[in-house]
Image 1: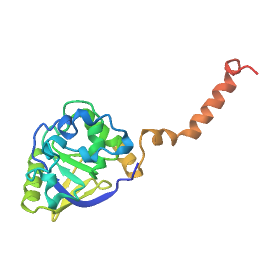
Image 2: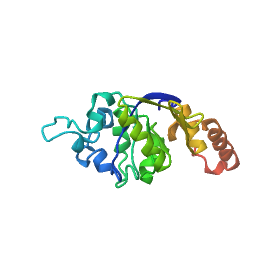
Image 3: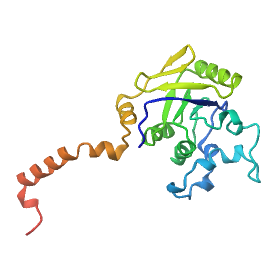
Image 4: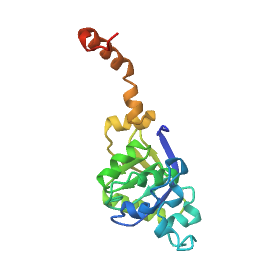
Length: 204
């Protein structure tokens, strides 16, 4: 998993409350292999018309946001189903952080497992950031995970993050990599366990 440290990038505002995971990526696209990438179908049904043409009013279709890596969303973002593909779609489309007042619980947890940082800020602060971004399309935010801050110009907002999850993102560790860090300790335990219980070993 790619390390997450400090990101300065274009941020896109998405003012849609209760944006559910089916809107983020419709269920019919979930059969794709992970290696195929899910980014092309991010927000598919609200981003494109039936012929596949981009809808000009959807924020991510505007040229100013084509390189966005930070999404500034609204309350209860990614609620609904448990589909991890919602995070895949955001990640594969280039997003490394989402800022919102609240999230669907499963989506929030899946973000950390896939290298996307979900930041929680008070609703009035998030609304102010969205307004500022809409007034200056293409402007950037800086997300500093080490210092747990979001910066725009002279404005700085602090956010909370679980210490272990923070460490995993900083080091680029998913759950498997995190477990493998303790491989030597697990091997030592297994050897000692077998030594204390030789009758449980495999027959010669």
